[in-house]
Image 1 (cartoon, rainbow, N blue to C red):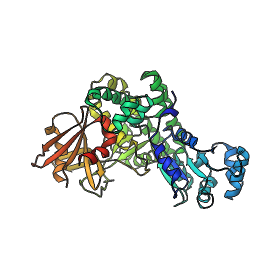
Image 2: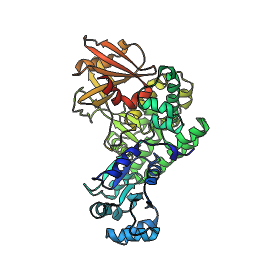
Image 3: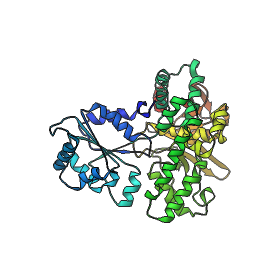
Length: 450
């Protein structure tokens, strides 16, 4: 089985983009190896003509460097690719576009003069490389989409569990198969969502057999470091993060001396921001008020979430512990369960600007933290990843006592249920207990339950 067979939800976005009267050239963002090129090639089957240009190749770059006239450019491309000049239903995919400033500039004219031709562009380390080269996309003439690792639904699709996938996406898993779906979710937590890892696991069903995939991915990210910055000191700091940072997944971190290094706060912060632009990680900042607008406190310590839990498991060496555990919440003090919940919360978000938040209150003698908060219809819904009796959800109770609503979510390994709970101050709240496999359906469930 190949990763091409995994049906990505992003295809729905591309279908709508294709039909839109307001379509602009599309910039596809995402970390290396999340499946950008594979997605576009799958989508291209809807077109009569598909032209693939890779601007790592000199002959493809030259097409954009010998003319600044879009009509002439298109004629040159069509002639070289042996496409009729009057061809219709054409998709041009410009891969590794960061290698050509003229190609980036030309996107404007594709939009303004030849919008009947559909254009998608993508590239590795787009934002970091373009910042370094001081290249920018034409403002207002392009649109963006972000692609992230596979969600649990896409994982099920890759493993040919179509019926289970339908139950999950409809938030209607029968209790009789709950344990089986939870077992599959535990496998997803170990494997992660990188398409090559999912595809290989679908064939082998062997966690050890996909170690080469992880090793190759980690080495690729490390090999890219020189493309992140022109500063030798920044490159050294980035290397330190890529070597040691996986063990701090789902932790609230300090920049000063991160990972036992001697780096100062400022240089470590700048290195983290650079890696974040490459979409390998996100620094999740806290809010202190359970109200919209949700304003992150960027001066407070952030929580570190990497792009994929499977990579974290491999790099941090906890695959065996996860495999042997009865409950993923028992592993690594619950950090792996929190990390995979964070991954699922954003897995199907296609906006480049999408980000996660958590709630933290640091009052003397009363420190409290809620794992995540989810904006929904003007409310900030708290999400705690915890087992145990409702009375143990102390931070959730503190949050709800300040919140202007009565809905809270707890993620656990048991089937879906609802509780009516009184907070520490006597406020009655509705607690939705979601099994892990429903995290990506949280908005659908809130719509149904509120």
